[in-house]
Structures are given as structure tokens and as C-alpha cells.
Length: 471
Image (cartoon, rainbow, N blue to C red; front, side):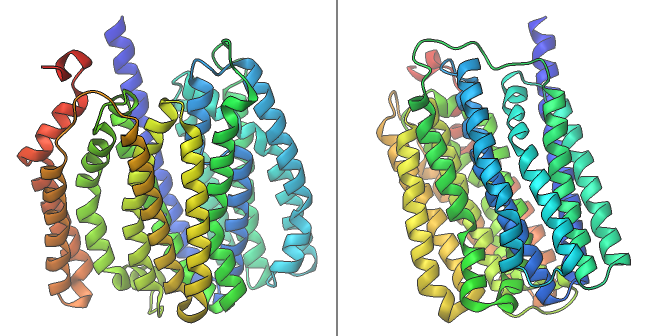
């Protein structure tokens, strides 16, 4: 019976991963349609509103959901904590919903008259329904993956259909309004459907010590993180205007799906990091980097080609910006690997401090670099902030580790050599073939480094049980 349950859980996790992959693919298709179909000024408006919506939903969610799900699924979680979180989400969502119309009136120029009011009404309804998205935490705690997978794919199909309709039938303000309406409908459907799938279920029963203080650092970290992850878009719009925002939107929207990859790679290694073993956090990060670094190096070298293929033409500055944002994913990988260990060890306050560091550093670099370098400066700022946050979190997580250490230096060297070789091979190819050559080189380098002796030894140590660690 236990084996059957484990196989069912594994099958559900594979289904969810496949659904996330399909969702990302559909989202990229929608992004390409919007990049090609909307004029730069309207594309910049779309990027600005979509980023504002993402920031608002992250405030309501308490971040991307993983830290909050971990808190609710822990022994210190439970129904009492759940009620407090839901009430707080409802309050925040209500405030943000009433801010929708003023924001659309002051910041967005591409919407006119009735279109502006219609989008504002949909934004109000979307944010009003947003607290129900928190029921995804219940599904995570209960390991119910299939409804989440179906909801993810179904809502994205609705969004893609709406975008295709907007580009085909709409024009000017109408096209922008239809695209934004599709985005808001997608998020509203997701909120309601997740609540329906989780009906009748509650988090694990509370234990002694389940207080507001247990969740406060998590909420602080994710609220601060929501700002620093999206501040670059608002600052590019404020400091350089819609044309430069359109270029940054090209790069950030194409690089955005890459941010999901670290979570998919880190999740199988959560048990090793949660045990708090010395070097376990760094080992998990290096094991994930072995699968990511060569591909990211190839994409970074071929950034201009990636943007040119997506836009159907040149976009000055967007290619190099995409390269910086692709490399920033390595910093995200470090941070997510460390955050798992910090949350599991009850050290969420340390993660909150790191998030504040990221906010200060990112905004400071944005203010210094965007006026003179535009979208490229914002990309450099994001890369620097993500790398600093990842390294700082890694240092803090290792500081509280225990048990025998893991040998990560040989694996780090192997990963670095694989990524460097990929970059050299891709850069040596003619520009029109760099993406193809980079992809082939990255595939070969990833296959080589994944099965190299240093990585095999590291993975064996990561999955070893506590009894094996002492041998």
C-alpha cells in the first residue's frame, strides 16, 4: 500500500511538472504574439499593468506560495493560522482592488474611455477573488497535484485564446484592453478554481506555539521580495519612458519562465537541505546548477538571437538585457536552495533580512544604472541583486548546518568548466547560428557534467540517509 501511494504521489508530481512546462510554453506563445502584435507604446503599457498585477498578487499570496505553503504544512501550521492568513489576505486584496482604477488612470496611456473602466472593473474582481488563491497551500499540504495541474493548463489556454483574439480582431486601445482582460480573467479563474478544488479541506491541526509571530518573517520576506523582484519595471518606466520599457519588457517576459526552473530542480533535494546537513544546501544548489548553468550560458551568449526570433526583428538593447536576466537565474537557484533550509530550520527571519538586502541593492543599482543605460542597466541590477541575495542566503544557511560536510568544490569546478565551454562554443559560431549551436553545446555539456564523477558523488551524498552520513 505504501509503495502504491508513493507511486501515485510521484505520478502526480510528474503531472504537475508537465503541466507547468506546458503552461510556460503556452505563456511564451502569448508573449510572442503580444510582442509582435502590439506597438511599442501599448506593449509597454501591457508590461506595466501585468507587472503591477503580479506584484499585487504576490502581496496577497505571500510571495510565490512556497514559503507560505511550507509554513502551513509544518507542525506549527493549522486552522487557526490559516484563518488569520486568509483574513490578512482579504484585507490586503481589498486595499489593492480599490487602487486599480487610479493606477490605470495615472500610469497607463493606451486605454481609452470604456476600455479603461472595463479593465479596471475586471482588475477589481480579480483582486477581490485573489485571497482564494491561498487554498493552493492546502492542496500542497495534502499532496493533491492533479487539480492544480488542470487549473494551471486550463486558465493558460483561456489566456492564450484571449490574446490571439486581441491581436487578430483588436486594434490600438481595444487590442490592449482585450489582452489585459484575458490576463485578469486567467487569474480570476485560477483563484476560484483552486478554492473549489480545495473545498472541505483544511491545513494540519494546530499545535502549541502557532502564533502570528511564526508567520510574520515569512510575510515580511515575501512582501519585500515582491517589490524588489518587480521594481525594475516601474523604475525603467519612470526614468526612461515607454520605449525603453518596451525593450526591457521584451527581455524580462522572455526570461521570466526561466525563473521557474530552480524551483523544479530544488524540490527533489528538499529532504537533504531540510535535514540541515553541513554543505547540504550548497550541494543542492550545485546539483541544480549542473543542469542549469550550461543552458543559461548558451542562452546568454545567444541573447540577441533569442529576442530577434521572438520579435521577428531587431530590438536594440533587449538581447544583452535578456543575457543578464538569464544569468540571474543562477542567483535565484542559490537563493531558493538556501530558503528551503532556512524555513525548515525555523529561521525565516534570516530570509527576511536577505530579502531586505535584495530590495535595497536592486533599487539602489536601478537608480544608478537605469538613467544612463536604460534596460541594460536594469538587467545588470537584477543580476547583481539576485546573485548577492543567493550568496548571502547560502552563507546564512550553511552557518546553521550540522553533521558531516559534503564535497562541493570538485562539483563546482566541473559545472563552471561545462558552462564556460558552452559559452565559448556558442560565441565562436556565426551570430545567426549561435542559438542552435549554443543549445547543442549546452545539451552535450549538461549530459557530460551530470554524469561526471564529482556530480555523481555529490548526488549520492545528498540523498543518503542520516545513518549513511556517518559512515
